[in-house]
Amino acid sequence: MGGRGFGTAPGVVSADKYDAAAEAWSDEQYADPAGYLAHRAELVVSLGPPLTAGDVVLDLACGDAGLAEPLLAYGVRYLGVDLSRPMVEAARRRVHGRAEIHEGDLNEFEPPAPVAATTCFRAVYYARDRLAFFRHVASFTDKKLVFDLDPRRFELEDVRSDLRAAGFDRLDLRPFFSPQRVALPRPAAAVLRAAERSGPLARLALRFRFSYLCSASRGRARS
Image (cartoon, rainbow, N blue to C red; front, side, top):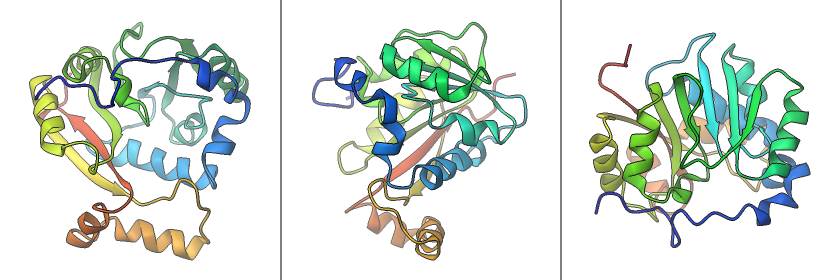
């Protein structure tokens, strides 16, 4: 059914559990934060309509802005938003004035001007209403919405239906095979990333582990 939240308690967000972990969030969440976030940034830029230097990326539920550095390396501008004040403070320390960080709820935040791309990782299920969230993001996003999706928990076709209803009629998918909790040797990591393009084998792997990275856009990018 369209408009459902993603989680068991959709839209119920408490920043308290994140506050205490803010200082070392990325380092503790990812066994290889540099490699993991660099791969994520690469796909944010390249999957679906490509981003170009100067484009603004709005990162909802940005945490400590771990994604900022690899995105800034592509020449895009970064705007982070998080509900947790300690996370916002940690993010501001990380970016050292090279990007804007705001305190806000992903369900309600609106950037001061339209952005090229909006990202939301490990947090889309905090939307109070999935379809309403997609429509909200579509109202200020010119090129694409990029987020992650666990296909074992959520029906891809239901999500696709809500994206279409919100005006995102194109959905590009890429399996994302970078382990979060395990740091792999570079050759093994390279093999896994190559496997993301293996078609049926990649889809088979997704039945057991890993997630999709989704890029939702309009058939013709909004001018």
